[in-house]
Length: 244
Image 1 (spheres, rainbow, N blue to C red):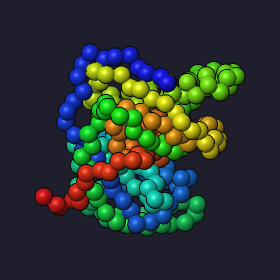
Image 2: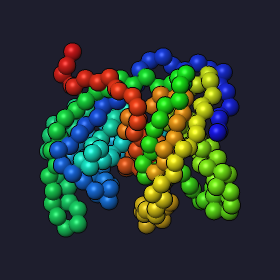
Image 3: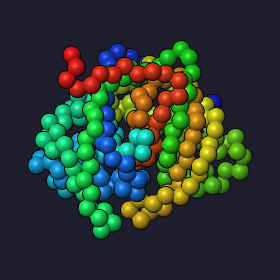
Image 4: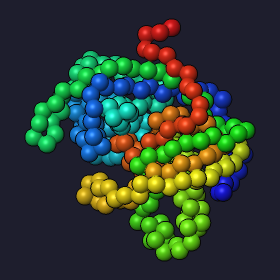
């Protein structure tokens, strides 16, 4: 089991707004990049958080707008009050995009606002993380050269804790207590490609003493459907847009 070092600052007690925009149409993982481009192009002036480009510069921070598949359908997850401002997007409830020589139109099915409490809890919660990209050019060689399965898992646990800390930093949360985390299963190790770069992806089950939101992205390329988190044992509070 791995743990991060203690932080002397308290965790925020405020809930995080998470808006899930669900589309009615199914989409494949390979179409998520085209879907993202179509969403951005559908807006006259797309907010910065939808594309993370400011002129020629790039916003190098945790992505607060994430494009992904939920129950095989296209979805956008917006994190925080600023990202949840989707007035520009809602001007067009139907979005057209071109992929594989085919024009497609997708339709917004629902918008749901969740209030997620993120922070350390007394018990260990169970999660599944799908299509996670833990390895970069630096730690890939270390992982490959590590012979012991126990040591490989410990390395992945440390990387996962680091990914979670990056998420927390991105939403403005700092922890006083340490994260305890244990990977319980690794499956579906496979090669994937992004911008012609081959990457190793995993599905992992883990338990941790931290409450994290359903469907939030963790790790590399979280903005385009990698590292999608599913909570295995806890309900969520939510309301539909327009509900008081």
